[in-house]
Amino acid sequence: MNLRSLPPNLNASERIEARRAMIERELNVDCSALAVNSAALGHAEERNCENMFGTVPIPVGLAGPLTITLSDGTETTVHLPLATTEGALVASVNRGCKALRGVRVDTRSKYHGVTRSIAFRLSNQESATSNWILEHEQEWKSVGEATSSHLKILSYEIDEQDDHLFLTIAADTDEAMGMNMVTIAAQAIGEYIQKTTGTQFITVAANVDSDKKPSVRTYTKGRGYEASAICTVPSAIITDILKTTPEAILAVAKATATPQISSQRFTSPQAKTQRTLSKDPSPIQLLNPLPRE
Image 1 (tube, rainbow, N blue to C red):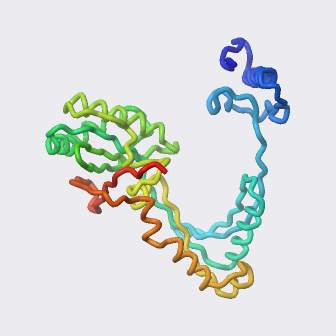
Image 2 (spheres, rainbow, N blue to C red; image 1 turned 30 degrees about the horizontal axis):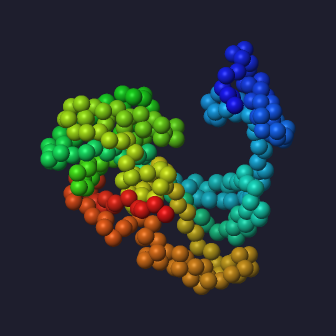
Image 3 (cartoon, rainbow, N blue to C red; image 1 turned 180 degrees about the vertical axis):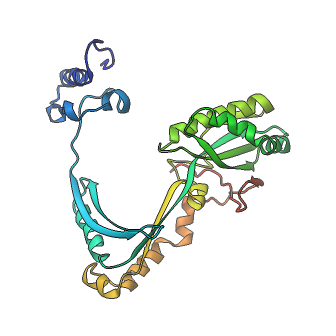
């Protein structure tokens, strides 16, 4: 099926209808349940989904209210719309909100920046490449920031292992989620460093920092926004509303945080760092990729 070669005069809704009709005809299936509400389509077919031929409604339930105290001391009450098909999820969240009524919930958020680790292959010039990056910081930063008026590089770190060098940049991407933005910037920086120093540029997405797989750097240093909430819940509420005990909750928390188990997600016995150069005083251990399961 060629779902892309459609008459050029069709609008988004008509293209979706044409694809669905083609799929039904070719595969002998009924896709009528995936019919699209044109008024709610927006730009999804043009910007968000290739070969779009339908939509699926998702139930939305409401939990709350939940009163929290923000980091500036402001108290606010929020309601939580939850899009889910998981039975009992909304009820479970709602019960948690009920348990926190009358309890002070202090929230904190910290912005680490959106990160990318640019990988290079070294050839007997480790110090030269690392030193060049340190000495020409503003130069290569300007190259990356020139790719978008909304991007500002906040910090960076250099890690070396075996014959590889990893330059991890953290950037403020304004109001955008920013992964595409920082990836484009990382590509420009990698190509510029390769052209200027002769060091081979390998990839903009090395395993030192990853947005889709476990990474020790992400685990220990965070990426994007890090949010936390702290509260003290009386034992009576835990017993009456949550139907458990503080001791049972702590036992489960301790079991799920056992170092011998949880650390295996992020480390391997062969993990070793040869050298770390950092603009941040806290060192980061560079780990070998985990084997495929």
